[in-house]
Length: 144
Image (cartoon, rainbow, N blue to C red; front, top):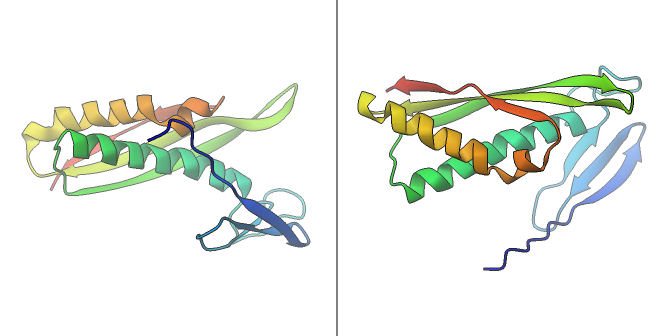
């Protein structure tokens, strides 16, 4: 498998501050300016949500790959991510993203390995590594 991967997305303005984001073989997604900005729209994915979600999804998929390779068994994985906007002389930017993964394990003896694999996933997540924003993680390991 080549180390070079290309992903193509297409965006078409539809009306007001809304558009349609698509990629071949994927469902089209309505996107817009978030409601806390002038002309923004509630209930529609914004660039800010997608940016923060990309870091969150990347952590999960990287963890899943590492857990599979490590033969680490767990019962459930979920997470929540919060992104905070900041302002610099260059304008607004996503200053920080905090991802809170929740990992449910079967046995207490798996807690330390679960934390280790989550930390390894954070280190190797290519989306977070590509961001200027600080990305932190606050894992929760739960016995199921």
